[in-house]
Image 1 (cartoon, rainbow, N blue to C red):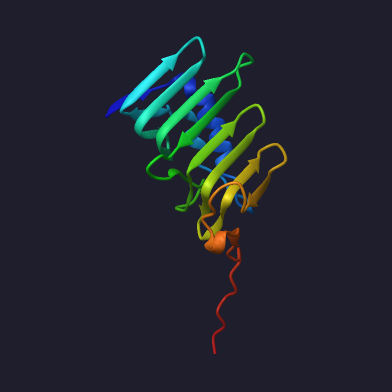
Image 2: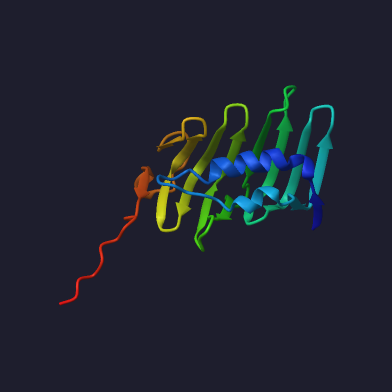
Length: 185
């Protein structure tokens, strides 16, 4: 496996990071120090097309930035004429996954789908195909999870792909934030 450290990919990792950490209800904060870490990408192959502004990483891809990890069979990063980037992580033989530690906590935010797409121009993260995001013990799952960064909303649907929830539906399991204290007899 070869390793490539890409400081010029930092804006993609930061915007994807921002979107990933708020995909569930409630205040979720990823480790702030991750933003200042270099992006390291391990893959079996890389193809760079400077004219098309495309980087394609293939074969057991692992992208790391601080505690953020994205694993996929393929990661494609493109940049348009105005400098906006899009990133796609694809799981071909397995699901694409991400995980990141929450700020000030031992808990992790994790997610998985057949495909993870982030569009910096639209500020939208889309998890497609058996999509699932967890934060601590909270879980959201369905066929497609779309997070809109600008208005901080997300939508989980059962159509358009295979759902990770039972019976092909959508599901959310939200734990109480202040569990009741046990009373002594």
